[in-house]
Image (cartoon, rainbow, N blue to C red):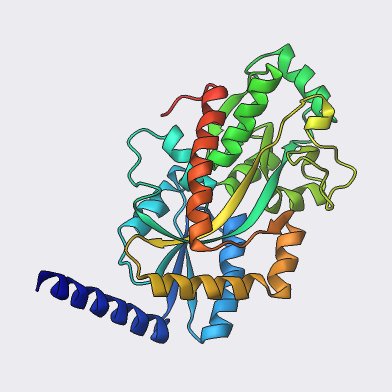
Length: 319
């Protein structure tokens, strides 16, 4: 009797899930991001939202909640109803790096979220204010070593911070860290001369480089970027083995019905296959890398371990 009862409940839950997936979405969807307008994540969320609206007819709202390296947004989504109407477009900052950087993290990156799928992989650009007297990475290293701690770097994400801390560890340099709620305002201050250097995503930094407001020293990828073919990689400028990047992925609150998750993965895949989004991705120095919920779950576990090792090696202490 008990087995039949539990089986009936399971079938009922499954049927409800299927019904909800067939009618989903029946109202507007909110995609929460942990960064400010103008960031890579913001651009991806808006581009994907526009495609989901075209596919379903339902509006998609992008809700920006910057701060605490994405932790404010992550906590909000973790506590939201698991109905598929509050989603989280985020990066390795919240899902892989923060657990090793933040004491008393107010969310669990594994238990509090249901993976939907990865969307892109990207790399970063080392940029300086034009007043910094360094034309390349080698000159910057030499300059930084003349007065340890004098040069400052801003960061509004764990990815950007760890990339710079890793650079310092590998080059024997010492920079002074200036924290920001998000990378776009950090770049604004870099342009204004309030800080000296950043290693940050191309979406945020490339427009300033093209405008002549920042100087590009090197890219963090294994190969040169097609967008900046004359800018060498950091590794080929004497920092052998240096590589740092980021990824974006889509999540829902834990407990979201599996049929809804797979419907969202289907909508995500269709959006990422459109010419407009692929052009946006390419123009911002990224590559499309779409995965299933199961693949993202496995990838995230591996990334948690990898980022933990990078952070430990760089000597960064949780705060």
